[in-house]
Length: 128
Image (cartoon, rainbow, N blue to C red; front, side, top):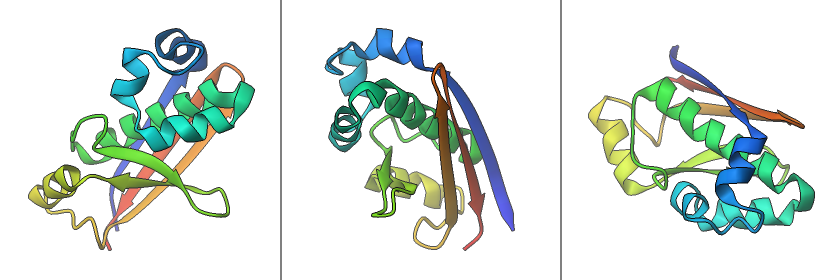
């Protein structure tokens, strides 16, 4: 059973301006975890596309669940295959439990796509 769906679209240039070329602006450090910044930096010229996708993923999660744990409360990680998934702080897990969503059993799916100027993310939250 689907409990929530969220989608968000982010302009890559907006992220580039706010995060800075070196990805070390106050916004970059405030909105992204160290692992997200390291992943983006590993992508070279596609770094800002990656960050735009991560930003969209966080927003899509918030839209799907109405859970707001802060920017560092939810972040994007990747399986060995490259597939992205969301990970959560303990604060986020507590907030999810408060709305009746078991973070250990919920089926939370994420997809991210980007094309030059835009990044989009979709989060589908299903019962475990």
